[in-house]
Length: 222
Image (cartoon, rainbow, N blue to C red):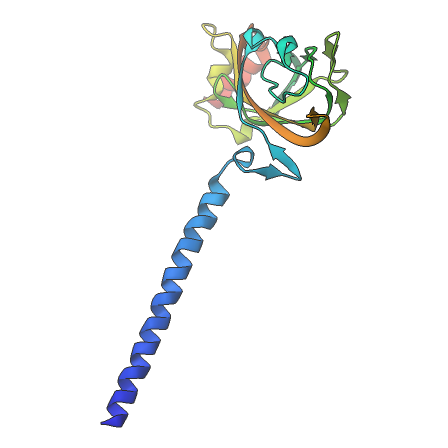
């Protein structure tokens, strides 16, 4: 009888341990998966920069940046987009250039770098190089960035069904994505490291729809 009780106790302990392991592993796995799937700017901090709330920027019709308080990190109207131009088109990829102008604000601070996420042109995903040249926020006159933003897209990385959208004669060029502005901004007389995400959407003339080489390449792909 004691042996039977001992066997039951051992079996119960093993079952309990297995149940605890399962209970622990599944929540951890779910948490890890959610973390991996989440966008970086939806976290609390990136590389020591605290994330500010997300803003939307509608082309040149954004909120007036000049009206911002000097201790505010609301940068929703900070950036003005120029006209996209063609850098290069060859059999492997398209590269484009985008000039940016920084509007004058009352906010004091320095931008360390700009990072672009989920940038699409007419629904086609493009890779955008980070802008890594620091600059101070202008307080009086607009500041045109000395280097244009570089966008690129490799044909091999994009589904063939999306590519004709780039030269659709019925469409202009519609761009959308998110810019993260990393820098130090003043708040209550103290400078803080912040990353400010701004969603943008703009429409303008399409500089690539009339390129015969691009039309030829897309025709061969189809």
